[in-house]
Image (cartoon, rainbow, N blue to C red):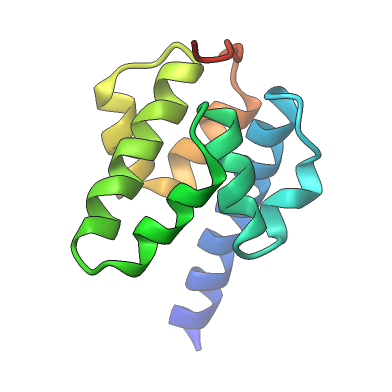
Length: 109
C-alpha cells in the first residue's frame, strides 16, 4: 500500500512538472496527460518530427532515443547533459524543477 502511494506521488509530480514545461514551451499543459499525444508534443518542443514516435517500438533503441529526447528538452531550456541525467534518473524531482524553475524555453533551430 505504501509503495502504491509513493508511486502515485511520483507520477503526479512528473505530470505536474511536464504540464508546466509544456506551458513554458507555448503548448497546452493538458497535453501532458494524454498518452502518446504527450510524446508528439514533446517532439514538437524539441524540434523533431512526429513520426519519430515509432522509434519507441524498437527495443533498446527506444531507451536511447528517450535519453536523446530528454537531452533535447534540457538544451531547449538552457540546461546541460547533467540535467538530462536528472530527467532520466530522478524524473519526479527534475521535471517539476524545470517546470517551476526560472529556465526559459528557447525554440531549437
